[in-house]
Structure formats: structure tokens, C-alpha cells
Image (tube, rainbow, N blue to C red; front, side):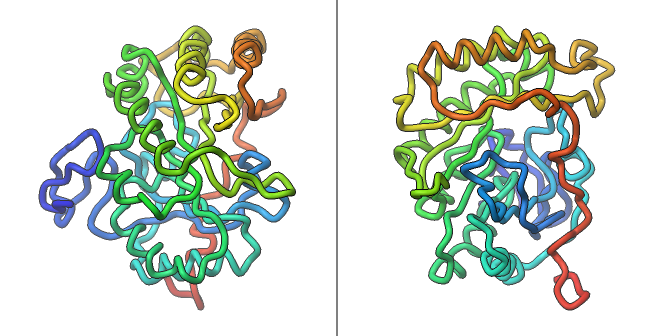
Length: 302
């Protein structure tokens, strides 16, 4: 990775991260906003004791409607050393976390890989890469042999939608190849006797207003590309308007039940396995407080 002209993510913005930040908001030091147990993931990830989530500040995709905009767009967080990051992984394990859940980690992949190598011999829980799906080969090669579970989004098939909502027309082209690379790394899903995921890939898709046709196209692609018994999907119903939607008025409403249910029926007809969300998820109840919880040690930020 060239920190003076960064091309780590698919945007290849060329920023000098030693002097400032890239499109993603990342500099040459890892920045995080929270490190704590989280119970808002899928049941096979959160379980009963919680997922050990580390929320990284910034994001290369910069979606207009992001519910985590405080950290993804506003870049809230504090800088931590690789050593401190490694300590956080072990602290989360000590708190009983079912896994270490790296949330939006891609723009800090080399630093995270170093921290995982430092702690891997002492970690006995899976490592989850919770990402946007918009990943480069370099990022995924950096994580090879370190990640047990990939938890990627697959947001759009339409290049028009991805350009409109995430300012990139190549989202599906990049993400579709990335997901296949992820699957090649981790293989079919494996679960513990009590239903916790310990290996494999779980693909998330957030159904958007006016987006059911795009969602159905994505489901058909997933069904053709991956054996249904070997992966899991998560159809998310929790869209709620937020962010800068002035140029996207179609997103300035909650999802209609008929839109979500149509997508669920398609998933069922394709024999897909995974998770759906019930009514009442279209709010920010599952969005944690980004307040540096868990990052401090003895009253000091490291």
C-alpha cells in the first residue's frame, strides 16, 4: 500500500494519507468510534452474548442514506495504535463476545491485518469482516487467512442506482467479483451446535424504497452464483430516511410492506436460506451510540 498515493479501495483516489485523508476519511492511523458487545446483528452473529464489534470511522462508499453517518461521513472517532487495536480484540473476547466483528474495516485493512496477526494465536473466536461489498482484490488479499466470516452488503445491481446513491457506477461489477473472492476464501457456511456461525459468508441486502425490482435481480444473481445451502442471506427491512436526500426524494420515506414482502417471496421461491426482519425495524433502534465506548483504557485514549 502506497500511503502517499492511496489506491487501496476501488475508488483509487490517490490521496496522500500521510498528510490528510482519502475519500474514505482514512489517514495513516486507524480511527475507531466504538468497541463493544452488540446485539443488533443477525442471530447467528450476535447470539446470546453479543458480537464483539469494532466500528471503524470513515467509509469509501459514502452512501447518501447511511444510518451510521456520524462515523461513515462525519468520521467521528479517535485514533488508536495497532497495539491498542490488538488489545481491544482480546478485551472483547474476555467480555464473552461470540466473535470479533470488524465493521467497515476495508480502508484500514493493512493495519487491522497486523493487529490480527498479533492476537490470532490468543483468539479462539471467529473474525467477521462486516463490509460494504465494494472491495478491491488488494483488500481481500490482505485479509486472506485472517477472516473466518464475511458479512458483506450487496446493495445495488443497477449502475444508475449506485451512481445516484453512492456516487459510483461500478458498484455491482466490483462487489459481485468481491463476493465470489470472499466465498473462495472462506467456503461454505459452518455453524456451532447452538446455531452460531463460525465460518462462511452471509450476504446482507437492504431493500430500498422503489427498489424491489433491483433487489429481485440481485437475489437471482446470488442464487445462480452460490449454492443456496452454502451461504446465508439477510434481507433487511430497517431502511429509515436519514442523511442528505434532497436530490433523492424517492428515498425520503420508509419502505412499504408490499415492497419488502415481494422481495421476501422471491427469496423463498429461489430456496434461499437466511434471515428476514419483521415490522418495526425501520428506525434507529439497532444503531449503537458512537461515543468511544470500549476504546478507553484507564481513562486514556491510546
